[in-house]
View 1: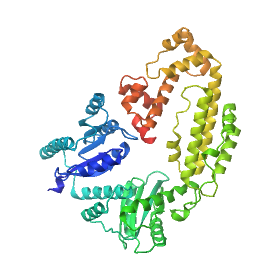
View 2: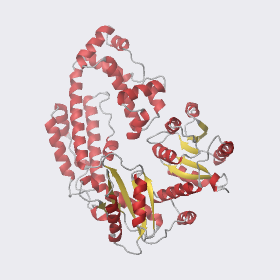
View 3: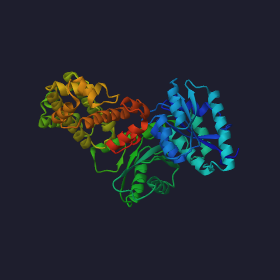
View 4: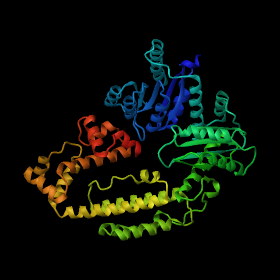
Length: 527
């Protein structure tokens, strides 16, 4: 087989059983194809496709962060010539129509038949090879880059616990000529944090050079896990303590500190013996890195920082009555005092597990949201935040506390405004009508008729009472609903455009970009 002509494949599905099944059940080698990446969500698939530009992508239609349909559209907009095969459990021809309109070459229903998928792949293979032969589709594959991407795929699968048998790992080690064995090792995670304007085009490559140079005397392998993370798996020659790898981390950091506008923080994983347990060492390194939340003046984190003491408080001990009262009174000082006391109560030790802090904060916000919804007995769209998304993106305890306090203060303002609006039944009825009909084209005359006023008088009255033009208010309600749906990941962008009353995707796209400064796909990627 001519490896230079191998056809690259990316698989994208949020179910690990399907990813692994496709990887092993399809006769890729006999098809002259090679799987160079398997993604568990749409954004991960986009990063793989953008980096390696595979000839074919086999993707689920519904995935977290970015749907299969939006993934195809994103590639089309970027002029990436990848050919798509869509997998879906939804027997709905409208999905197929949309997928084909965006450029999908096949649409296969789950539970899929390997024979059906293989037949589609064979057809695409023949088409691709013919296009390569006549020059209409350049061959982007070369042997060296194929080996590099295969190595990265294998190592990422290794640390993500996607292998079930040691024999599969040993086979891959031989194929890729990696100097790893079942002998003591640790994993180091180098986390890249940008502190200013990027000064180096490819910072991960620069970091990899430093790591490879400093670890040169050891048996190791290093790779870019993602654009902000480089991983080093290094054998420790039977030494159980982390001191030698800590010294290695220090040497790498010393070189890296000469580079401006970046900071590197290293997490050192647990010592392990068998490669099938690499996920344990990797997980320990990530857990240690999470303790950056406390903003300590250190660049290296290992098991010694991890708290093993069980929390002394739980969700059942939280009393939010005082906070709810402060929010309903719009008492900003009391809201701030409650939050300060609450966060202090979480510090049962100086540095409790960051996952505990985040979890208790998410619970608090969710409990407050649910209580306020019940108390004000309204379905108005006051609370569109998904606290777990925002909080898990924050890097310090101070940021989490400030954001949570600000959120509750915002709730207090919203509740205060809402309670004022309730005193005016016309405004209340108008807003409820808008909320109930957010999926339709809402005209001023429709709402005016609903509240028994003339259109001209209603628009003047609405502006006087709310301080907002009627059209601006309707647009804001629609865009807030759209943002909520984009953040939830429960619908694709085409579906969302119809859910907020737009007949076609392009009108929604323009309205959303004008309102937020971002396209729907960009907003979804950031949330």
